[in-house]
Amino acid sequence: MIDALEQAEAAVAACFDTATWATDERDLVAALDATHRLEQRLAAVKLSLVRELDGRGTATSQGASSTAVWLRDRLRLGVGVARRLVELAATLDAAPNGVRDALAGGSVDVEQVRVIANTVETVQASAGTEAADKAVGVLVEWATQFDAALLRRLGTRILDHVAPEVADAAAEAALRAQEARAARDRHVTISEQSDGRLRLTGILDTEAAAALRAAIDPLTAPTGPDDTRTPGQRRHDALADVCRLALRTGELPENGGDLAQVVVTTGYDELTRQLGTGALDTGLYLSAEAVRRLACDASILPAVLGGAGQVLDVGRQRRLITGPLRRALVLRDRGCAFPGCDRPPRWCDAHHIRHWADGGDTSLANAVLLCGHHHRHLHHGDWVVRLAGDGHPEFVPPAWLDPEQLPRRNHYHRRN
Image (cartoon, rainbow, N blue to C red; front, side):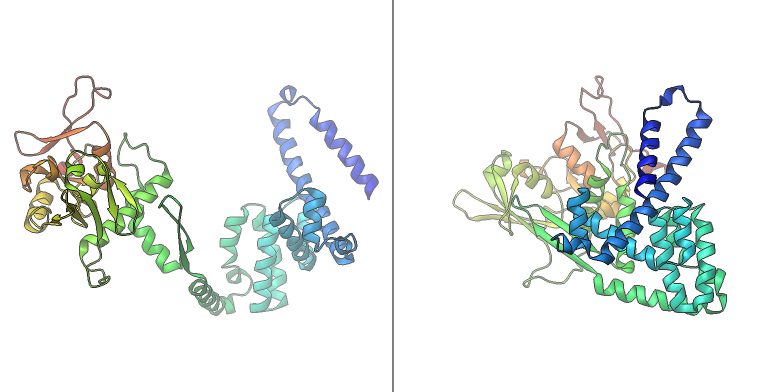
């Protein structure tokens, strides 16, 4: 065997030295196909070697705690990759001959082998050996057309092709098992970072995943040509928008006797001069600029203190744009008023055009609807919003974007 492998290695080395630029396109494609087949055949040989070495206990005889650890050091692999290699070698060893032959023949890859073996095992348990043998042929044929991910999805209905008499009952049993597994594994972990940010990890069951998708997918699309956020940043902002919407409904359970709400505490002088910071109930701090932006939102309860620490304002209702005033604002703006944005009213904050801390009143003439992204954009950027002569909001772009600074409007909601 070693002689044959050394000859193959020499042949591959010779191919590497060949000038590909001098090869015509048809031969390049044929060479790619041949290389892929060879790669799969070598994978089959490698897995058979790993399985034999594991069975002989070579790793432990050489002082390693396991074959995976030995492979990690011997082949300089990550330990996770080494473990999967040992597992796949065992899977291939137990797989039907047709699966092993397909990998050795280069017609399937190792990930497809994993899918086929797992699917055939399920068929064996559900419908017996004869159906499992049929499944091997069907799945190997499918593997010549579909990648591992699609093959796995198709495999969920393999019984329709090889044992239709038990397919529906098996599918129902598999679905119940999947739901039970999802219910057992569901979790969300919230880890606080040293700078106050949170790291979210977890697994959602199918129902919760569908609800999350339905809630955040409409909010993850770019809001317009000026939206430079990455997809991950858009998903972050969408989740924050969903939380703000939930707070705004007033239907969340009480927490410590109070309605669920965010409380920001700051000094009046610091707020009006946009200096200093604001404190959250969690003990973390926000910039005064962030506090000014949050104070526009009816789901945020600002606690503004005077110089001696006395309470000057704790969420005065007359400051918040709620009730009939918000309904009038929705009727006027019909959604985020920023040019080019299609966010509906329920995803929007009511922004004071002249901030309440600067003496701005709470009225329809001093308010505009903005989605979370454009609310932050307006507070952090150089855009200016004002009401035009017809009473509708218009936005003046910064000079670096439009030297003439021609006012712009949102025409999306007006068209609808």
